Image (cartoon, rainbow, N blue to C red):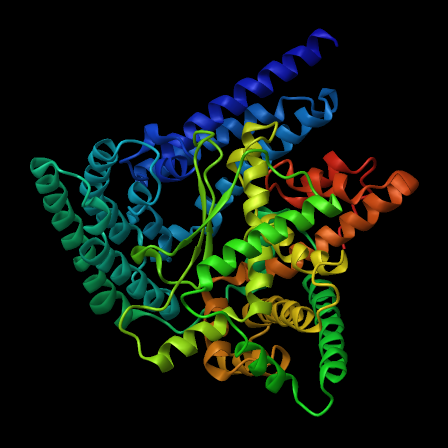
Length: 554
């Protein structure tokens, strides 16, 4: 290696380390969630002067990175170089061009969340409580900055969603904080917590009033971000630069493929019943509420055994996924994965939360809730969330050979894997040809197909909310209420096309990987390499794992 190459490598390592330290300091709540608890108790400073300072720092990094000769680096070093360059460019776009911090109150809610101090036993409870108190005292300043940064006329959907989110934050403080702190037998410290809670609670209540009384009356009904911003969203976040008309055609073709598959499958199961009728019947076949946790535990063991027997992936050693009832403060979803951050202690546990019916519900309410846990859907969701989905992915990423890969993730990558494995497991023989399991998998795929198509059409082609709702009802066989929720999500999450987009990118990469290795192809090796480097932009990962990357993404 020449002296120039040595300098390039050492300079890249220096820049990467420096950038990460600056990043963690500016985004302390993200650092804390990754397992870097030296940043506990802090929130982001998004005051105008701090934002301008961040922009200046990013431009300096951009200039320094440009002096490094990428061609002189090894593959793994070039991977880090690409990640660093991508992340700097992404952040600069976010702060200077996209400027979401001026019109979306939701992006500040993450810094106002304090459940992390009680969800995981990563340190003694008194220490975590002290950091919780610090965080609570920081919330009024955070929300004052939020009010200063927000424009006075922003999309109505964002205001309405924000009102709901901040109401939830307030309720958490007063309804869900006391139970986890009951083991704390320190009256003085508890008094500090409740005083800090009142400080934060008052600030959140006042901010919610601000949303309701000032921003909501002035809000506008435009939610579409437009074709230019939509393309930039994909270019900067995911490094995808494909013309929208081609992108749409690809998505519509995959939607058609899955529709034809589910129509043929439904006819095979029962030619006398509609797809909706068959899906409804699936919902009636579920465990009881009392059985749900034990059934899910057994299912995860079964999934793990299948992966080992078929040798489909290298499972993280000495890492287990605990199945637990969803804690009271997090019962907003049917099931969710809470994976330990990449920098948490090796002994840190991961939790697959399954939400049980609420105490006091009627038999009818319980039955309605449990239909969401029919056996076929429970299997599909558990594959997506745990084995070999998000849990295996993020547990594997803890050992990624790159610090940058441990920190930064893309929507297309982590959802591509979880979405892909739902179908891959069935193709590899899981369920032994169970047609109902295949129907549940196809039903989920159709929802993601509709998100893909509708995200493009509603944000770049004028598709209305009623039209989006009908689209989900007609093409994903949803009831109107659920379809309307999907439509509404699309207004503030245009990136939800990334489930299907990512899966298609993965499948194309797999096809090219298979062709490149020929007789030496190994599906297990592909799986290990695909998730072994975290969740980077897929175009960057391709350069690392494909012997030759021809640049053809789809």
